[in-house]
Each structure stands twice: as structure tokens, then as C-alpha cells.
Length: 157
Image 1 (cartoon, rainbow, N blue to C red):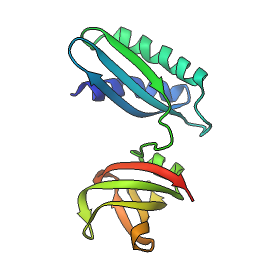
Image 2 (cartoon, rainbow, N blue to C red; image 1 turned 60 degrees about the horizontal axis):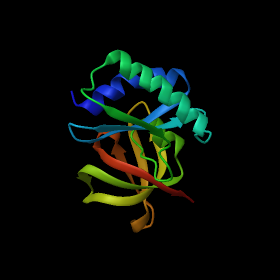
Image 3 (cartoon, helix red, strand yellow; image 1 turned 120 degrees about the vertical axis):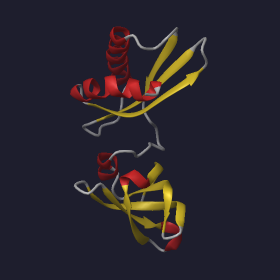
Image 4 (cartoon, rainbow, N blue to C red; image 1 turned 30 degrees about the horizontal axis):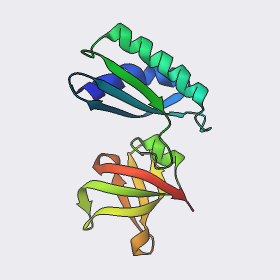
């Protein structure tokens, strides 16, 4: 298991219990010094505050200290995902329904692999996302969440 996956595995549930959504885990650096960068969002959909980041940082730090699977020194950074927030889970697409996202697919759908589209619907039971492709007059396609390689919110219309 990759280090970022292991970090995600041990911190996701405790963060959720405190009202936070784990958006992204990014680990950068080399063998001498790593940076563990965590982006969180609030489950109540309010804006992330500095106090939220401090609370999440303390929680994550305590968990990583107990689990002790990161070799060597590292820096922990906790922040908000910002304006171009990644969409990775079905609940992300549900929350940002109506928003525009830049998307890249694992496998092309109807000949399309990279595009900008508006999230117009979600079927959580089937893990499907319906997207209107802006470059093609909002022609809609249906995507499996597993076929979405990368998606980031652009702005609301």
C-alpha cells in the first residue's frame, strides 16, 4: 500500500467523526524530509476556517504519532482544497451538482477523454455522474465514478 493511501486509511474516519471530509492526501519530498499535505472540507458545507485546520492538524498528528508508519522526519500541513477543489467521491459530485468541473477520464466515453462540463445529476446507488459537456452545447453523458481519473470544480454558474 502506498504511503498516501495508508495515511488516508487511518485518518479518514476520525476526521469524519469530527465533521470533516478528507479531500486529498499529498505526500511530497524525499527520504530526508517529507511533507504530508492534507486538504479537508467541512461536512456541513461551511467554509473551512483556520481553527478547523488547527483542530484537524492536532487530530491527524496524534493519529500519525500513534500509528508511527512514516519513516523519518516529516512536516504535516492541513488546509482547505481551495477554489479548484477536487471531486473524487459520489458525495463530492452531489454537493457540487450545478457546478462546472474540468474532468479527465480513464477511458474515453463517446470519444471524449478531457473536457469541461456541468455536473447535472448523480445516482449514488449506481455510482454514476451525469455531466453536460460545455464545449458541445451541454450534451449530457453518464460516467461511472470509477472512470473519472481527475475532476476539479471550476466555478458556479
